[in-house]
Amino acid sequence: MYCCNFHQAKQKQINCEHFGHVILPIFLNPLTLPIEVNVLQTCELGQIATMQRFSINVVAFVVCCVVLEIKISHGTPHFKIDVVHKPDNCERVSKYGDQMFVHFVGTKLATGEVFDKSHEDKPYRFQLGTGEVIEGFDEGLVGMCPGEKRKLTVPPHMAYGHKGGHLPQMPGGTLVFDVELVHAEVGPRHPNVFKSMDIDGDKYLTRFEVREYLRSEVKKTEGPPMSEQEQVEIVDSILEMEDIDKDGRISHIEFSGNKHDEF
Image (cartoon, rainbow, N blue to C red):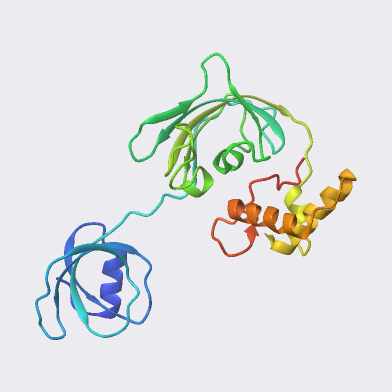
C-alpha cells in the first residue's frame, strides 16, 4: 500500500498499469482517467464498504482517502506512421492531390483480424488529400516513394469511429494498415473547400459560414434560391455528420472534404 499523500498517490495513479491496492486521495483537481475500481473501504471513518466493481471517470474533491484496487484502462493509441521499407532511390514523393496506387492490408488492432485488403493484381486507387479515403490514409501516405512500405496505426477518429460504418470493411476501433505505394502521379485539381467556407479564417466553420457557402453555391448554379427552412435543414444535416465533438462548429480536423492548398 502507498501512503495517503497527494503527490505520491497522484503519481501512482498515473503510472499504475496493473491491479494493486492503493490508498488514493480524493482531491480537488478533477481527473478524467477511466479506471476500473474495487472499493474496499473508506479510511476516514474506517468503515468497510461492500465490494463492487465498476468503471468511472474520477472527478472528486478533498474529503477523505479511499482504499482502491485500480487498473487504468489503456487509452486509444495515437496516430502512428512506421516506415517499414524505403527504396534507396526516390525521384518523386507523393503529395496532396496525387492519384495514388497502393497495395494494402487492413487489420483490427485489438484482434489482428484482417477486414480488408487490395487485390493482388489491381492496386487500390484514390486521390490523396481530397477526402476520398479515411483521414489516416490522407495524412499517413504523404511523402512516400514508389516501392515504399509503411505501417499506419489509425485511431478511431481518423478511421471509421468507435462503432464503425455500415460495411464489414469499415470496422470501429483502432485499425492497422500495411501499405505499399506502387505508383503516384499528379491528379486533377480541386478547390480548397474548407478555406472557401471559413470566412474569418479561424479554422472552424460556424452555422453561419456553412449557410453562406450553400447560398453562394446555389447562386452559381443560377437555380432557384433555397427557402429558409431548406437552408436550416441542410445546415443541420451537415453539422450532424461533420461536427464530431458536438460543439456547434466544424473544425479543420473534423471536416471531411478537401482542405489542402497544395493542389
